[in-house]
Length: 484
Ligand code: NAP
Image (cartoon, rainbow, N blue to C red; front, side, top):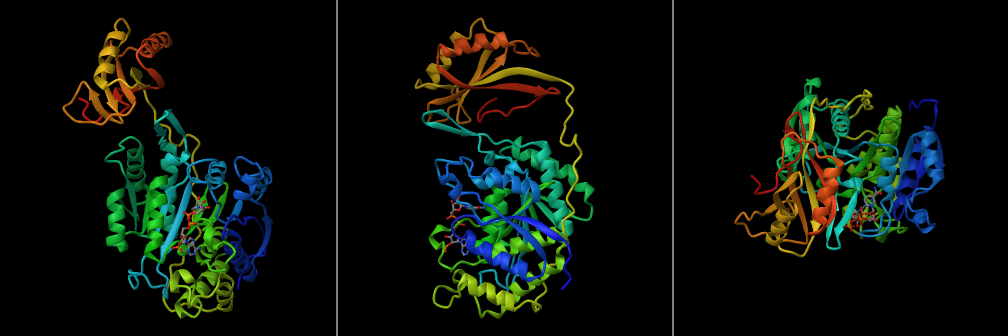
């Protein structure tokens, strides 16, 4: 086999739960190809939280990644619903791995309801923005908020990466899946950016699809998709769905791609109930290793492992318990041996041979949108009160007399409740009060703001304000449901 003579420096994070077992399988197979690697073994996740490192990512791990720019990583455990932030997300964000590439394909010998349909598609998920930025606040003791931040720059990066993935994989089409019918500014920004950039890739057909229909179509007729580009949370959910089409999370690899760093890991988590039992399927992690090898140009070694893995599944002699159940299964280590014994064999059915992805190069001013005229036309002030919307509205109308703003409407979780619309919204104790500037085209000054907030505070506790702006005479905010 042709391997380059280069010695690759790679950071290796074994991870939590089943992580060390799947990482060991992958490392053994990579080493067995003859590719030369200096593995720098460092740690992150549960063990580091226990040591009192609040991010779960110690400095020596950060230093190692900064040096190698290349990581093979096992899954890391994250406490659910409380406590520390995800060390996975921290790693992805620290090194600006803006794109998460998640390919799935049919494995001959792995029976699924879709067997024989030759499924083969890739989800390209935005990886650092959206709700997973994790910017959350309790606005009242009873009402939580999570900010969904989407930038033009982030959209441009992920869209260009998706088209480059399509080219590297020899694909004919890319679908952009968004919820832009509802979230016109955030999800809509991805759709608009996709439509702007698509003409630069005339060899690839560009389609937009609404994300919920995308989920429906993925189950009904998944063959219609080749590459799907989507926002962070949508991509997280969709890629678990696509993994289930081909046999489950045991078959879903991924690459977190940045301009300067790449982290390769299985889509699955640490599956703690199987930790140390030598029962789990290492295919997802092994395929993540294959993606890493392609990324660094070791394409022959990548092909050797992928071919041997395909042969192993197709000959159906060594299969793990997620595929054949407990009785007939082999363990993780025995499965890995079987793959190694199949080095040099070619699968009967052709499998897609991808080229290394040509990473997009971004201009420094990328994502800038020139605006000639900006105005502040009003304020959304978020308040906490146990008053009814009618009482709150009446009090505010009175309190704002003599200020440069007037109350336009009050909404509760996005639906107008004052003036009453005839609907029957069940309100909670957090309201958004939309206050418009009395004089058109008049900016609201800091002293105006002070006065307004003083008056609002006399009526209800305020916790958050948002400027209502217009850019080039277009409103840069959405209306409430029911608002004129
Ligand atoms: P999970 O660890 O992915 O496991 C969910 C289920 O998927 C398992 O119970 C098992 O299903 C199946 N599964 C996962 N990996 C498998 C493999 N290699 N072979 C065969 N089956 C496999 O998800 P979770 O239980 O929701 O999360 C556990 C922890 O992992 C959490 O702390 C979570 O935050 C973390 N997590 C980390 C990452 C990451 O590091 N990138 C990603 C996701 C989750 P059956 O029960 O049906 O056998």
